[in-house]
Image 1 (spheres, rainbow, N blue to C red):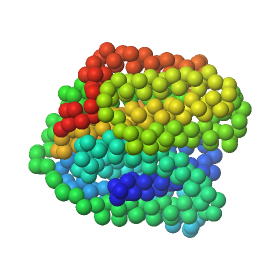
Image 2: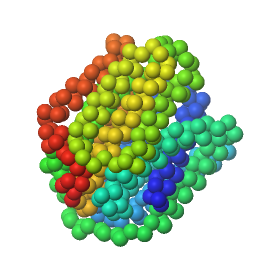
Image 3: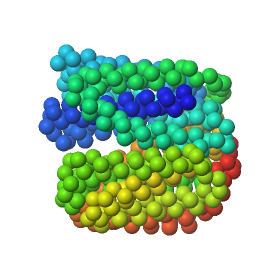
Length: 393
């Protein structure tokens, strides 16, 4: 519960912060390109530090790493609050703070994820991940709304509340009582730093699961085109766009809650491939829909299917990875996750510019289905994987 509270507090904080930063950057610059740079400033630190992060997480106290980095995040967000109150906030200060927060987040996400197997017995890990996903999706739904309400009061109120939530996250992590097992500090070599990549390549189930997610999200990123569909095809305006954006998270929230109550036990490989195929079909239905409510339903199903594959993938990775490798493997996993989301949005925008929004989204869904078929042949060990606990490290 302390782990879930910590993760929820920080997720809420970053969802709220994103609302304030987006409004302020666009208000100061009036530039859509500047908004794109916000995402880039968040993404680059994680990409640059990924392999260093994994090595650090496997050599030092993971709980202490998370606490130190979240204190840095708290100070950076509090700095934005103070600068806003003083009327001294500029885009330079905002981007500097985003970069600092991004560097700290690069350490927090994989290190905190590597803590979970030490807190939950293997037989309950998939259920724990389902609850973690449930809380996470609730944060995605509630965080922006709360941030928008507070922004109407004052931008500084958003940053101040976000800083307080990160501080509460630090406190929750500090209260966790767990056995601290620090691995033997092997010499820092090229092989040890990139051991996470080597380990994943040696496990066909893990390589197949991670790469399947990468290409499925890369090709099926139709959510990046939601403003076009809302305005040009569904004719619903900004309020409808907000509902469309929430639909995948609502679907994922509902499915995560179901899986927390009824965990997956058998034929998880078949279920994972089926869920990714449903993700592709949902993308195609959304692309062809001219009904607002059908589009919402397609997006909700898409989000629910993605939640199933995410929980299976996360369980496989954490159960099959030894404790001394958790940090490095989690770091590689987060590179794939971040890359698929960022590049998926870029791919969708690029193909929409070439062919139009509807053909681009349909092609993405069809491409996802083709990837499922190819991966079923290329990774039979993943397809035939029966129990999440099978092969646990």
